[in-house]
Length: 517
Ligand code: ADP
Ligand code: ZN
Image 1 (tube, rainbow, N blue to C red):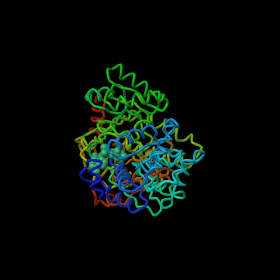
Image 2: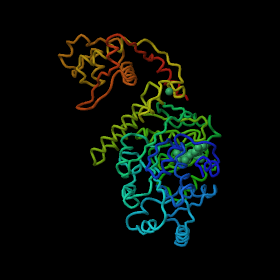
Image 3: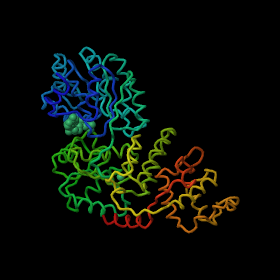
Image 4: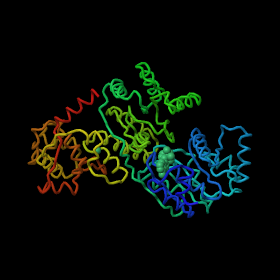
């Protein structure tokens, strides 16, 4: 059967999405593949369809035992014989599945990585006696320490290619940052893999960030407009998920909490209620959501600052899998950043600590951005995108812009005069002609010293952030944190490029407005 015919027959879809077809053809050609597709993009079909077409067994490695049952149930409903093996099953059940495997009655077998290796490697020995024709590694970023969801048991998968040298491996993830990508490829030992990267743009999601002030009030205002809709609210700590769920219940919302510290039963019950729309709001830690295929999640709120863009983007991606308009709202408070910074630094691995801090920095920059949020997010994943998406808070608000060329020139010449060796705060103090002790005597003699005294410190901070966001300045931290020029800034200094800045008044107005939300 042709792939397209099988897509229709088993899944009821009339055409492939993204690069599904090319990916499937690679697997059918027995080549290793890595698939990067946003959440909701349609990764499962990339290995489920070959599983139907190939004559043999596809082994699917998946991190979450709780989700295997859903996947298997839905495959069986589509007429595809599949099963899972995990510790929740009785010995009889497991024996029954082993028998089906021996009789070549199953097309897909879902297992957790730890079942394959280590003490329980009997399963590996058994699998090697079967006709394994494909190995799929779901949530492949779990193998990377640089990713946001590292699972040590995934490291064992490095041995897969040795055990099954001739079986094509397809690794799938919705995490796209370059470092994690490279790490996945290195650790899995894939053989000349073809890498398929889909656009990560989720055009039906609107991104908003508002300053966190009175979060309960802000949330209830937001939720009041969405009483009939389902959504997820992410909090940083287990305790705050429970507190917020209680607060929301008291305010009359159908909310429940979800975090890794709850018992199996409570988690299953709350998840089930959410999937059935009995509970509208899931207040959760990031333990909730991976692999949960609820298509009508209309909003994802981050009540606390996420640790990095990868996690944030994946979490917001759980909204709007059905393609309908959905919201991603983040309540930002600089205090959260300070807290997370402390978490990142307690790590006894300095290299990892540095990476985590850098990622946190990128997250904070996103929150403080005065530019298109979608563009920032997609650029983060190395994807080009025009600077006006029309559906993020920045692009939606009618900002009043003014010709800020002179302001930009002052800032840029200050950076030049100070030999690109100073950070934002020093440069601002220098521009404002500050009497502060920290300004060096020799700098006070420079012509630019005090050239921006007519602008308040707060405004300067905004303008500098905007100049960075627009690419006229970049922040480096090789020796110390300092601002440097970019190719774009040369044009401004020469006077051949105009710079548009947002008037600070509009920002004040916007902040005031979002507080009422
Ligand atoms: P992911 O694992 O990438 O998050 P899924 O594989 O769960 O995404 O797919 C998301 C949704 O899109 C599912 O409901 C799936 O059935 C649907 N889907 C996948 N491929 C197609 C397609 N070619 N046409 C229409 N819908 C599709
Ligand atoms: Zn935008």
